[in-house]
Length: 331
Image (cartoon, rainbow, N blue to C red; front, side, top):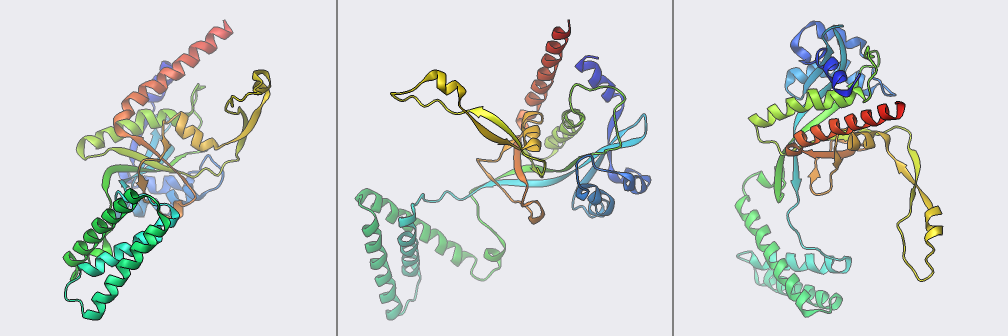
């Protein structure tokens, strides 16, 4: 069967279903057995998913084979957010302490109704901080820049302090530079008991993600703002070690023939590589994500919503090309 024929077969069988679509699902999920080692994810489905879905803490979906009427896999979706920190000043280790002292000195001077003793203390702290800054920095331009930045930071802190002095705003909020709406994908988990009746040239999870989950995400993104999707990959699989060539170092005694022989071991995280290569996620690098305690050992992976359609097309083009190559080898 060609890739398109395999996809058509799955299209006619698999569909999304909300966990609480039927009361019967509450009993049916008890037989779910996760395909990967361990049982944490399947235990969540059996013991907590229904309650969490009912309470609005998460939205759980089943992937069902409607012909065989069995659960193929499940996943959950949550509202999420990515953010970037407030644009701070880049400081080296020696600059950090005197810079923060200068900020505090400016803050003290900004405050009204200081006593003579307090004003004297503020002035002394300002002079000491300046001297400390000049001690660790040789460039006058750099010192001037940091003095200016310290003044700006102190003014911002004091304005914020005065504005929310009589409220709990400061205690319960964290200021960031920018936020980005996102969807958090959880518990991508296949039922170990389910085996397709045909041979697939791609992993079943690839079809489920691109042809069932992604269209659902795109519909959601039409209703609410959503710039990213992300997930936490619990990659506890055995690390695979492969050998890769070292970067070429051109030196006077460089031997190109010897360089071809040199290889170095690289650790490959199997699940992370699967998410990157087949589902087109990447490590989060530009922004930050809030990570719950129970996912602290997971790898954070992210993908732009506006790239989903393009990535979806490319992944099937890639698999179709591989299929053609394999058939040509056989012929």
